[in-house]
Image 1 (cartoon, rainbow, N blue to C red):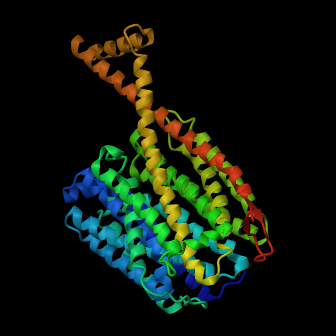
Image 2 (image 1 turned 180 degrees about the vertical axis):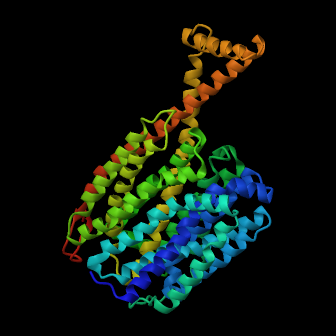
Image 3 (image 1 turned 180 degrees about the horizontal axis):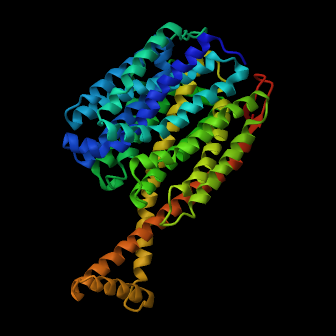
Amino acid sequence: MKFGLDKWIVIVTVISAALLQLVDTSIVNVTLLQMMGSLGATLGDISWVITSYAAANVIMIAMAGWLSNKYGRKKYFAASIIVFTVASVLCGMSTNVWMLVFFRFIQGMGGGGLLSTAQAILVETFPKEELGLANAIYGLGVIIGPTIGPVLGGYITDTLSWHWIFFINIPVGIAATAMTWFYVKEPLEKYQVRGMDWPGIGLLVAGVGAMQVVLERGDKEGWFESRYITFLSIVAVVGAVGFVWRELVYEHPVVNLRLMKDRSFAMGMLFNFILGFGLFGSVFVIPVFAQSFLGFTATDTGKLLIPGSIATAIMMPFIGKALQKKLPANLFSGIGFFLFYFFTYMLSHLGAQTGTSSFFWPLVVRGVGLGLIFIPLTTMSLVGLKGKDIPQGTGLTNMIRQLGGSFGVAVMATFIERRTTFHQSILSDGITSYSMAAYQRLSGMTAALIAKGVDAATAKVRALAMLDHLVAKQASLLAYLDTFYFVGFFFLACIPLLFLFKANKEKTGGPVAEFHGE
């Protein structure tokens, strides 16, 4: 395939803008301690920096298609970059934590318009038969962005200060805005938006926004032990149900849920949720395991994820080309799901003395698997949509993937906590005055401390504390291994669902998946 210069500029422009949003989703995670010290904030306060961005982001992702149609894709994309860039400057200049939370919310609103609109622009830049290649290019940003965020954030924070993780967005934002204005074209098929669906927008903000806050904050607040989490859960359910009803009955909805009548798109939504669950959930578990249990630094943890991202980057162009040759998309996805299971199986055999080298091949396998999953699923989801429906379709798929990621993080955080408590209880029950192994370990620790000059009474107390620490550490390790098993079997169980798709090469002349039904 030959690209003209203008097409390459469009590709670079939209990927650069999408990376702004994707990198900022994860770049803040490794700088929270520095922000706490600089702004005088507690851990509970500073965690709202992440929550506010995520909530605004997922709301705007859902609305991006409607706003793009109403105001023009080019204008909306450029405006989103400008809002994101200006908010980045204000985030970097914040002098207290609540200023930062507010400007992160604004930044999330700008970022939410970038991801889906970037994908819609790419999909329309390429002819239909090259949709797999377009999604391969887009997928590079989606997979690589969250991976390089922690590495970049750690390096910038260690070298300069946390303020610069926001200021680095300025030159990229200015360049992307200029290139958008001069090179991005409006779609040939324009969709006339009539009226303003204020009730739909209100229900979307209430339902999705409350759900995102519950998923982000629920584990930290003890779930339904917290009154405000309980209240927001009710708001999320009522808002979501009301939103779905409103969008299905209203003639000009803000989010066109009628696209779900396309069976391929509906199944694609389901699998994008699953993909988000596994992608973001594993990106959450691995750094937490590496830092809290193995004692890795933030920068070292970020570096762990780089080989897998390179593997994904290498795979995606090949998968895009293979789909152009009309090879079955669901076959690639099935292999990808199995490789993801194999990746978690490898991690489930790690030990307490694991080093960085032990992560290399499992994460490379994960990277190859993600490459095999992402492009076919995206292609199968969007291939049946018409021009005016593409922005709405990309918005919905990106929103559902983000929500899947939020569910994944919430479920895994709770699972780890509860399995840790379970294993600690089981292990503690085995440590009694009648346990010869426990007695010998305690006696050995006590003798070692006495040999170092500690008096007998103090040595016994310290030995008990050391034994308790060992039990807690072993329980934590077993909980993480259980989590890897859980994620792996979740993906393995999803493979049979891929047979609900069937190949249909006639619809577009390329690899398509239709839902196997009426």
